[in-house]
Length: 490
Image 1 (cartoon, one colour):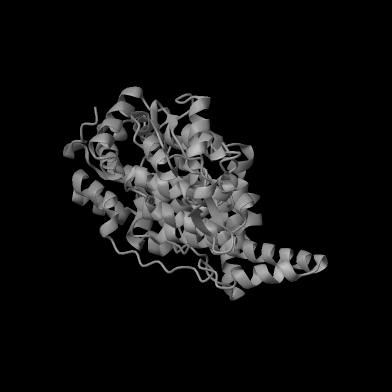
Image 2 (cartoon, rainbow, N blue to C red):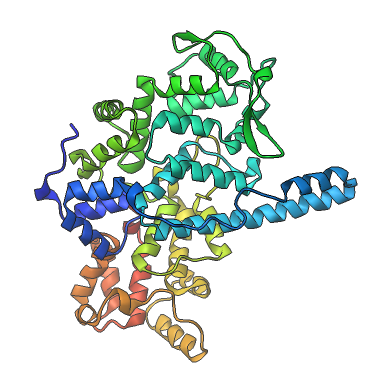
């Protein structure tokens, strides 16, 4: 169990699988670089991302917000009609910041030199599912995502304490309202059921006692900082999971995170996110053991997971349905095109079922086969045309425009002085590759599938390419491939 993959088995397909799952895939040259490193060094490069510089700029609108106090004062002094206008202005401001935040985060996933870090941030966003729809403050959501980024592969108890104290979480699960006279049980219940232990691993008494331990942890609405107010805290002994102590907020959360069941719960969640569902019990136990031996640091667990022979088993490779974000970011990286920075991207992710910063409920996204239905698959097929040819291509490609019609469309674009398509076919496939349709088909498979296309898709791609593929034929084939059922799996 958890034996490292043999160097003899380390090839292009294995390295591509690692990059797809521990990141967001990439062009063939990035995969070949991992092949050259060998499995140990390739995993070490991904897991050891803290040593890689990543000077991503802070958004202009991110905290701190120097004008917040003035806006609050203006709101208090305003008449009711004026307050309505101020609320509407604040809502417009928040919507603009959320849109900018989503596009910036997607671009960071595409261009980051730390792919595993961003993949983990996406995992934690689903694990600690918090929504802007209730928090209503883009700055607080940004701070939460930054917390995930800071602790992405670090010490589990420290991360759980940081999330418990996170202002967005305090609002999302009503902890900011909890006081000794009336402890709010929402966060106590979810931290046990969803975050730290798993369903059925605690009692209702454990929830109540944990809620008492968390009282006094609240939010200063003016400064938007987490504060502990002793007068609101239920002092005295509490018994949680068999241990009695005068728990405070941090102490009770560390107590939960240090449970053996917490190690098993987290190991299972990570395996199911990065590898396959369901997580086998024996494998979960082995991963949890690595986790506890490593002092509940996440890096040793991740290193063991990504090196394990089980991670490269046929039952795992190319069996995972890409999430909408994974599908979009992987396609952009493989197409080597700029990240789309338009409201269309936000609409597309909403239609595909994974709107960043707005998970559907406290359990996050269901994932897996739930990502795919008739509507979402049609949306993926349509948005594939947008990625390849640009937004104006969407209506035509949705109706099936390919081949000769697409060729005429590209000529018309040039004649009208319109921008070239965002995907440069010549950059992806040099002339010597394109002169041989069979070789070009193999290059398409290598870049986008890292596997042979099923016969039906291969026949479709050959028909699109023809005997002398030009730019239009290559782009039409790429669109067909991105829209195929083969491409929905990784």
